[in-house]
Every structure is written in structure tokens, then in C-alpha cells.
Image (cartoon, rainbow, N blue to C red; front, side, top):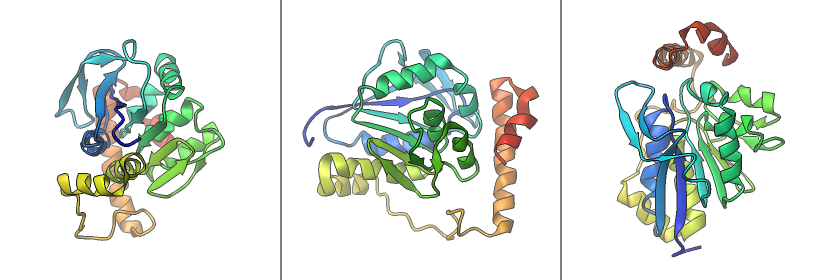
Length: 237
């Protein structure tokens, strides 16, 4: 596949977590022959979960329905609203019928699960929400990257960078992927070894859960569905 043009779709929606989409984007856009499209349900402004960043999306799901790679990024809470949109889920299924790779970051895998594409397969997601996939017959797996056939799911937020590099290595090989890694100077050396759920103490997990709940409440406010807050957050426990 080296040297072949690749059409890559990244689906955006109100309330997405910025790094979920942009972390992967920075890797994928550096693949030789990559042709990237941000696509939303409707063209226009998309607001991220922080409420501080807007993205002007130029393509709608009615305009682009095929791709070599489909990427579904996650969000703190907005993914649950997207899962209620049958037109979006049907679009995902249609595009998936044309892809070489269908991928997700964070809770984007729960959207893929709700579309029925991951039924019977293993998949990963953000540690807080990973259990929600069971409802759709998916096997939750606490790994940073999970590959099942053409489906590749990544754990929370920053894992999208690793997933995109993993995917790049399959498409353009080791040398170009290493060059992409150097191009974005991705050389993680975290101050603390607490970025994995299995390594974090109970104290740190509780502090993180409070932050996630705060973000979820803010996200629900941005989406105008505050009344559903308690039920939605309870599902993620």
C-alpha cells in the first residue's frame, strides 16, 4: 500500500475531546498519499468538550460515504448522544463497508459498538467507560491498542497517537512511521507512571473520576441535556 493515496475520514461532533481527533490526525496526515477529511453530521461549527475550541467542518455525512480509513474519536459524554442518532450509525456502517481499516479512539469504540460493527470482537476504550461495550456484545479489553481484523480500537485520549502510529506502520512500513514519529517529535517521557488504570492507586483513580464527572456535567450543559445527567453518569460507573 506504500505510495497509494489513502482517503481518511475523521468524524467530528459537538462535545468531542480535542486530542482524540487531533492526536491521531497529526500522525495520519503525515502518511505519504494521505487525503484527510473532517466530516460531521452537518457542515459548520463543531464545539469541543471544553467549550473553548470550535472547528469549522467542511463536509457532511451526506457528502462523503466511502474511505480507506474511518476514525471515530471519543468524548467525555457526547458520544452517548451520537449513539442515539440512527442516521449517524447507519453512515458509520455504510462507510465501514468501504474501508480497509475502521478505527476509534477512547469512547469512539462505544459508538462503533452501538453500530453493531464490533459485536463478538474484543475492543478497548477509556478505562471509565469501557464496560458500556458489553451491552452491545463486545468484549472489553484493557489494552492500549486492540486489533481485530480491520478494526483497531485505542484506549483513552492520548492512546490515539499510538494507535495512529501502529496503523501507519501497517500502511507505509517502519522507516516512514519512524520518520512520522520524529516529525511530530513524539518521545513521551511522563513525569509519573500513572497513565494506566492498572498502575494507578485508588486515591488517584478517585481524583480522576471527580475530574471526569465534572467534565461530563459541563459537556451535558453544552449539549443542553442537563436533566439526563444522573442517569448517564451512573451508567459509566
